[in-house]
Image (cartoon, rainbow, N blue to C red; front, side):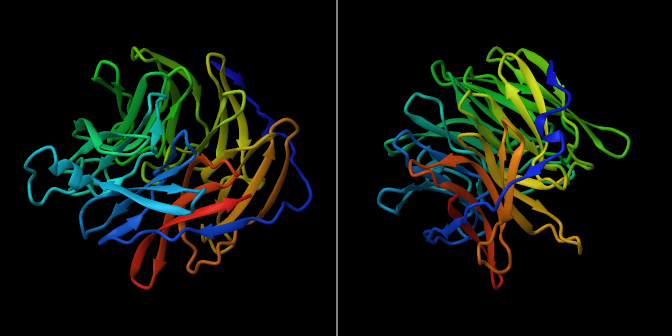
Length: 383
């Protein structure tokens, strides 16, 4: 079911006055051997504290979890994957779990849920999953020991939770898992995607329904359709996803997403084409976030009148690292656009999730280069 084949932003665009100045502050992150990047692994508890997972590359071979309190400006280490696995019993000495890749998401039960995954042996063409697979975890919002919930052979890239359902999506093939915290039961369903393709995010609405792209390889491009999956694993085909991407490796599926005040959900595919899900009613096409067309859109955030977020388009030389911060009023289509200048050289690689603290600041994770090192980065942005 599709609400609208032509959304608001497909109409001629009205650019309005200069946007307010962005205040961008890199947070000082704890160090550990092999620290590498924050691949969109952020979340928030009900007390307003920000949680984030830092992936590793070598070193400890273990992703680490941290909690940031905006009220005190303090970051607290909350454990790492291999240490938590060792509490479960003897582990192979060469086992690795280098990534906390998923969002860190609450289900309304006092816990935060997330996944860890590995890269050892994983093949980018989709011919092999990671050697050590993935794990589903939860931790009490008040802190404490991790709880191990399940182990899967696929590499889990994203997670979401609501209304008694915890969902995780794995590669390759868009393998979807649903975990029921009350019954400690896990179920599995293959949605479908060509080898080498992954979606960076899945969507979960307030009813606990999940939304995942079903992707096939057409003539020279990928064809994608948004599928709604109910908690009893029924499938509801919803709408085609145009401008999804040309090749499995190029397309990152669903990337930026945010939930608006009316509980509808706006999300961007990796080319920056926006859709708005009205749960139980259908899907609306909004058009491209960037006024000039396709742009990688790794972060979206809800505002009082619409959305704002990061859009990355190539400069005339083809460099995809020119970034802009975009505001869009979804009621009238007005928008404002300004440079997104971090002052970090070379320009960092950024990914985001829908996280805003009580002061209105948003958070975007990623990776920066410092000489030969690739180091994690977490930006606090006051828009």
